[in-house]
Length: 192
Image (cartoon, rainbow, N blue to C red):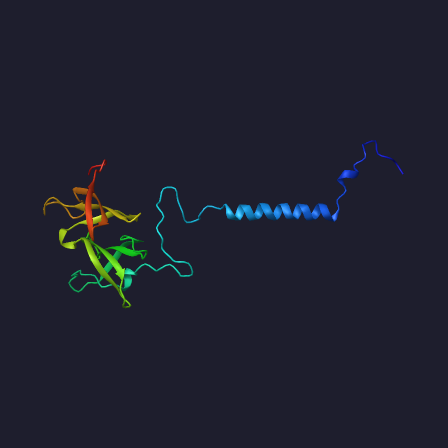
């Protein structure tokens, strides 16, 4: 048997007491880490909006495919071109905002922008019209964020302007204030 030239390492022998102490320390670290976790739904840039109570599932946003829109398409069906959901009025239930136009097959039919809520019945109902199709507008850059609806409205200065090429552009937002949607115009740095 050959002896080692290294010093005696008797203090590195483990005993059941060493393992018990290590296990207790690891359990304490894991428990502390679990208590110090950030809220996974919170964001530094987004204010927290409560959407559920403990033990309840979040409310589903209204489905625009099941809604009836105040849109006269002259026998054609309507098409939901864009949709976005969010809690617009702070009641912890999501609304859906839908951009809807007639399915004309070609051209650029005017769009309507509607706010839907889930009524007590099976079908969602329209509670606000933000853009009426009679205004002759098309909608782009549509979004719902932090309770604010934003869109770019594209329109025409006269009937002489080709319907493919809108010559007017306006960035707008709508926000629920005092029991109604309040519209604000935003500066559009790109112009037309």
